[in-house]
Image 1: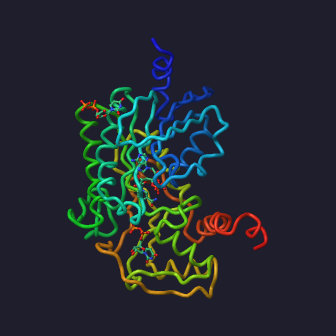
Image 2: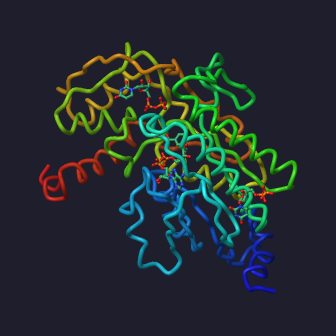
Image 3: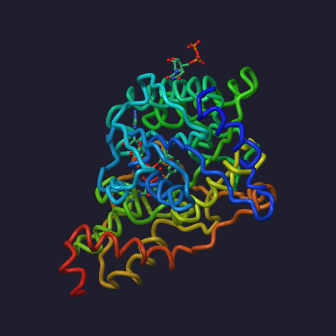
Length: 343
Ligand code: NAD
Ligand code: UDP
Ligand code: UDP
């Protein structure tokens, strides 16, 4: 029997995190697709920190080597440049499937590719998980609720999604990815987990990815006006990335399939957000109104009762605490280390 099969059998008992007292948890081999991206790279940091071996599979469409370069000398880390739309053979115990552009600007850039990534890419990773009997976690999104008619959103809400709009490649792509995940769970008895992630921000976000938090922070730092789309009264709920990573790991290690909303229930209008950015970076930053994009959801706020109760998880970092941590990183990347030391 190959060594990794023996490892697999002996770790299985500990996957739920219920390690007998005094016994060290066995290290796992974990695949993180999209691990060179914003969320993925923070997850990789934590997995390596706890002693696991990590393989990142990423085509570097929106991810960057820079996000994981600090692990290149670590023998427990490996990165493969690969597109999940193509099949791949690997041997791991767990798969965190994140590969997919997340910013509307990026996922609308090539919508057909976005659908392929969500459908064919997820199918391939599920096929892989089935072959090696690995536990599979899908990072779905609050976008499956579309422009919600229920507020806040609970996991039992089926959503209000336009199937033929400019956001559909992402929304419907993720909805199909959820369907595939549940069909592999029911049909192949695969162990699966589904997270529905709400707007997340933090260090390592692409500076010009078009998302609202990264836009406002970069604009304020560059002394450009903050671009508010529409009347700025639409709402979002912003979660700091370390809270999300903790939720993802608790979900993977726990006993529940989900789906689970993972987000911070603190709800802000875009004008509120602009105010927080002004207070944090530059009280004189101007606001400029722009035409809104098509199908923009009017409001979004997670009901996280299910994650609180079944995962024992809730976010800890409010926007006014998390934003300065992101600003430090953006300052360094926009102005270089030297200037940021001076300011
Ligand atoms: P990101 O764009 O920073 O990361 C996505 C990563 O996937 C990138 O490294 C990219 O290069 C890689 N990738 C894209 N297509 C690929 C392909 N076909 N093959 C291999 N790699 C590919 O985005 P993120 O914010 O880190 O999001 C990670 C996951 O979380 C995504 O699945 C996203 O849908 C989900 N999510 C994120 C948020 C958020 O606010 N950040 C909200 C909801 C859901
Ligand atoms: N797959 C993969 N790696 C594997 C096993 C499967 O990439 O180790 C891909 C495979 O190419 C297929 C998909 O996953 O396209 C679904 O595989 P599954 O075995 O579930 O279905 P089938 O191959 O019968 O269509
Ligand atoms: N938005 C904005 N200014 C920007 C970018 C976005 O006002 O420069 C708005 C956008 O219209 C939406 C909200 O901010 O209502 C969140 O957009 P984002 O692209 O960050 O994420 P979404 O939740 O729409 O996926």
